[in-house]
Image 1 (cartoon, one colour):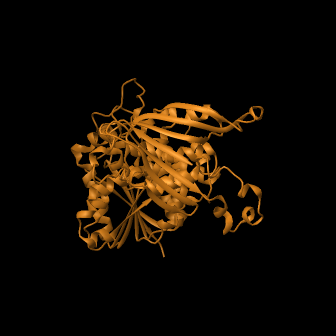
Image 2 (cartoon, rainbow, N blue to C red):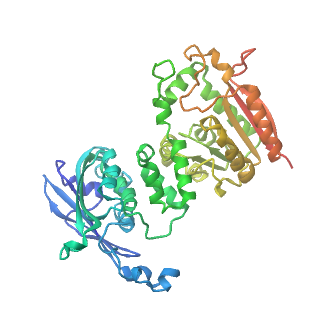
Image 3 (spheres, helix red, strand yellow):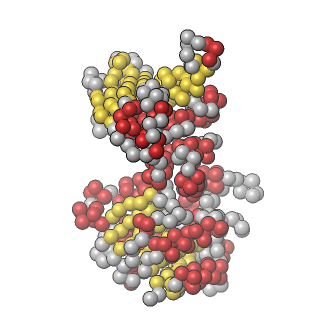
Length: 475
């Protein structure tokens, strides 16, 4: 199987720097299914082509493997299209041989990583199980010009008709790392097959490679289902994470009176800036961490890491974890904390999790305290029951801190029209009685005690701008 990457960017030889491959060498790496070679058949200042050629050993793929299909000696395990047609094996080879390029890293030309380059991807034998129409539906929304020629089953026997394989050229102008993620995800989708076991780790791979484009792709659900080999539970998990992490629809929506709402965090921060509310929230939560003498803390929905930055220097906290549904947020959090410049003791203290709050995750367990700072209001209310089970029943920390806006206080914000929420991605905002009723229900059901505090200067009638619940596990 073959993938060719061509650019006419000047100088075109920059392609070698972006791919971390010297154009004058053949780069070979052995895979569990064969050998992957990267070489440059065309090199000049005006035009440069890199080729990924994967030699697949179809017999070696099944020779030593256990399983019904292999042990039964079925013919299709030994006579198939794997050596020739692009498939999930090509994606796996891309991740292994072009992983640094796909991750957007270039030591020698870092300034080029985000630059849109004129690119042509050639795939001489690409399975398109869904035909040219599906091929175009997958790539054209991402800005590609698609040239496709359907291949016959056998040129010697035209009456046999057409095959499901196409010779394809994809043209685009985009950063190389982004285009490589498109191919990595969509090649197995077009083949509608995976040549290896698909488990929950494949969800993480899909979301890592699919951010930021997959959540808004018009064929998102089809892509997810096919990529995850039609395993419904995994597809539902992936789609849920994409929906939770994608605030574009809510943020771009016009308000009911026809005016445009400020985008996302900008609106909320502008409203609360005069109150220094974000800083006071973080200080209040940090004070709870200190008062409870929590030595291990997991920040569920850590966002860009503001609370983590507050807790990291605390001597009593020896284990700290940031979790978020968005890979982008985790990346920004890492950058915010500048961990590579921190003492090794602080680097060792902190770890990261990419996960969802509405699915059980064993990695959430074993902490003294879990924090959900301005998180619950970003979920649809019917999903709060799942969040409660994940946090209070399965993770079951010794204490939980939850903060959320007090909707009554919104009347004090002069720039916020009546009935509008503080953040366009908020699914709800509760009054104090609503929040306290919800919190007491969770405490009673899961065996916690709960107390409440306000954060920020309180209005005599409307209360404080932020409300906080502190849950402690009962013996």
